[in-house]
Length: 501
Image 1 (cartoon, helix red, strand yellow):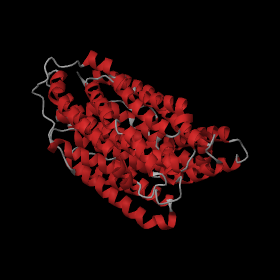
Image 2 (image 1 turned 90 degrees about the vertical axis):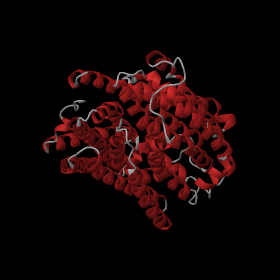
Image 3 (image 1 turned 30 degrees about the vertical axis):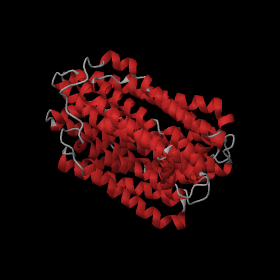
Image 4 (image 1 turned 135 degrees about the vertical axis):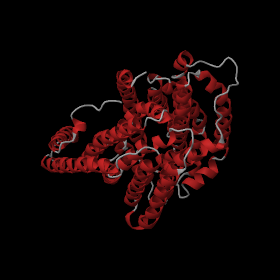
């Protein structure tokens, strides 16, 4: 299929993925709102969030990490060679299941040790152990869900994989809503387990229709060896370890600190999740470009994704910094979540917002490293360097700055990784123009700074307004000023939706 012929299909796939994933993200926002409303921010929510470290890690490791970065290129190469996807399933799925079952069981059995390591200063470790044992099943279910998603996306099927976030949050919201009274915060952990099962079930019909089960469970597809998997596993674990640092150090601060950090990060990263949907759809095309030696097409694909994501993230960051207290008040200040909780969360969120671009850039820049048949350790090394910066800064500064130090260290560390990935990408994979990317980022950052300043001034002028109308008007103002300044600076990315090449 030619590039021109593929373009409308990918645009439709992008739109479908955005719509379905947005629905899941909105329900995820409802999930976080209910968590704040029913349980507030205290030692109990801290215990649940420590247990939530397991599904958070499992998601980036097996859904976004190993299954996406490893299996999509494997399936894509097989399809490009006119081989049936069932051959890949026959050769890889049994081995994947053995690994996932073993890891899931080990996580449940080792829950007490895991809680002590992640959060040694936790106020209620027994509650955290109970919740961790419930969430341990996600290692298995997320892995299966990620495998099904990889097979479907490589074959150009995006609807069912996009629905996994919606299915996941249906399970969590459903159990929290019905059982928060008798079970307390444990209802959220049980909901995580149920939602992870829904992630598998929502994809099974599409998988059976478009891929199908092998007629025999042996095939000649490439084996998933330790040498192939290890760089991806180390990379994704190093990336998730930023959360480990946050919860380890946060457990030594006042009860509720881990919850404040979590709420602030979840709200601040909503724009990033939306922006990275573009890369989710274009990754199979990028993998085919690299496999076919189409270096120029691959370069344009990466640079277009970078500019699009940067524009979306920077305007969102400007809005978050200018209107953080009102955004948090509108979203979270209900039920047991008090005005004091709002003030603490908003202050931390302003710091987190400054590092969201680094997180998004890492999401874009890491993918090309995993498109070829040979694996590289460069992303893992870059992520380890960023993690070292995060941990070092946080350990030094937490005694003086508390939770703010954790949030700031997170942003500086991930931005370090993004810069290293950009430099390494040019040398090892795709000849991305660093000056062009830097110039576009600088222009967009200037537009975002102007928009954020306008929003902050407007926020002071509307200080007496209720939070909701002030936040809505402020959002429209920041967006309008950003677009106006970006157009004036000649930034073509905002004139039309970028072509999916």
